Length: 238
Image 1 (cartoon, rainbow, N blue to C red):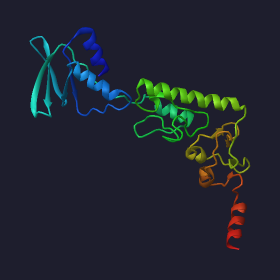
Image 2: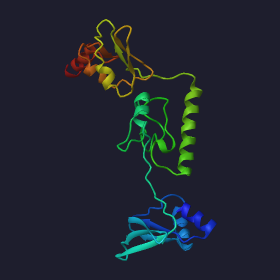
Image 3: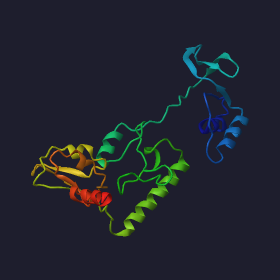
Image 4: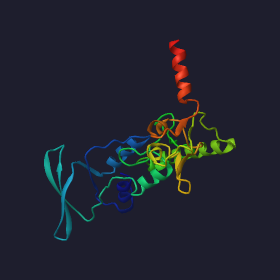
């Protein structure tokens, strides 16, 4: 609608908008939609089925679903509205930083309402269209929120880590790398020179996935060792 408004304002051209549904969400968007309609920009509910040349002009064939009649519109230019998709390298970036992705490939926030710019990885934040399609005001607002989160984190000087992080006993570790595959936070790396896996405690959130999958029982979780868990069970049944 903004492109149609600018084209009408600069050139006075006759403009047709083919659409299926219009949801003018956001502050002032519905009013802008009404303004564009008052500028005699024609909105036709229906999809363009075919575009071809005839007598030196482009012909757009479409069906007006509100009137239930086919339309043939002669125009000089056709502008196709394409959907916004995630970048091709998004999956590789997500693997490098250990962040989650939504079903449509965009980066996923930790919580849509409580933590809208944070990810599950400490110190990694999202802003703008990397999280999903957004307009300029929403992108700017989210960027300011992400910048504030970064400044708040940097001003601490120190990072608080989880107390229940995992550890891997180097004497028992067989180097199978199963813990690396299941770790959702990319907190475990494999040391090629030693043939063992080690935990980065700054990234570990103590979820316990590695301790459950480790076949050699080399991966253990602080404060949740087998003896401690058994002692808690005995205390409950005593």
